[in-house]
Length: 414
Image (cartoon, rainbow, N blue to C red):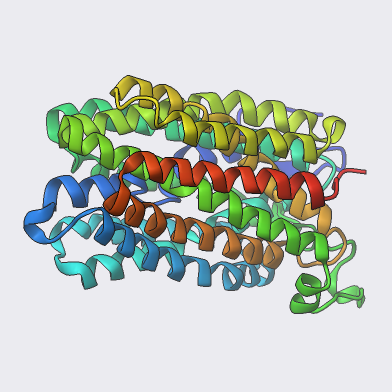
């Protein structure tokens, strides 16, 4: 095996741009999810009740954008399955997400904010299947789990670094700094994507095929692959439950901080929450990626649900900002495991079908639905009954997910 500053060659002699993949995942980390929790802080703290924004209205906007994004997930998977130049699609999506977010300070009203965030959500639907497909097409199925773990490690490291920068710069420049930080990282991510040679990607392998499409290998239709694959449908329900419980937790913490310590400190403390979780996710992703074959996916996923339920309950113990930051670090275990194993489980369940990416999109649709409903659910409960009741509700949903996975989900590793 030969090694240079940017790539390695696998056993078949294929060019594997190891460090370029590392850089792409690192720089794209803060771009792929748009403004994330900073959007809620911006709308609550900068615009606020004077302009008609509260937790419930923010939740509605996030839900609408989330629904638009989830409706785009399956078509995004189909697009990636068919695309012959996946790095170019990643670059276009990064530009759309960033331009939609950078327009926010100059647009006004619920409709325009909803439209911009919906565009960002549609473009963001491309990233997960595209990165997974590029990775699978470059390294092949045998090295996929290990490489996905490394992808996730660099993704979380990128989130940690960008969140730390946002936290430091927000003290001086305020919440608006996150817009310009995203712009810089978009340029860097596009530069990394341009370094991936499209000819090095095996497009048949990238979609989970055992043979080339022109060899007339039998492929089930996309809908048949989804509907008749019961473990895949069960995993979609589990992904829905996980994100219904998880998605609103950080957003709710950010809103709580904005009310208790002010907008500037809230932005910096939310950044600290993100950094804490992402720093934990880095080693978790590496360990999971390296040991998924040996440990199996089921016991690892049960750990993720256990940490998620405990985290929701612990948020209610205290409103102290640094307690909330410490509890948020537990997200590094739950979300770190989910991110590292999500494409691996789907690859296991769809092996040989040629429907890997559309299956990713379909399960991501269920996942996105859970995330979108999470924002409205949490926002409505906060307005009606307070933050503690909201956090406990999310913890109970996570407990339901734990039981469902334990009782019904099969092990996917042979």
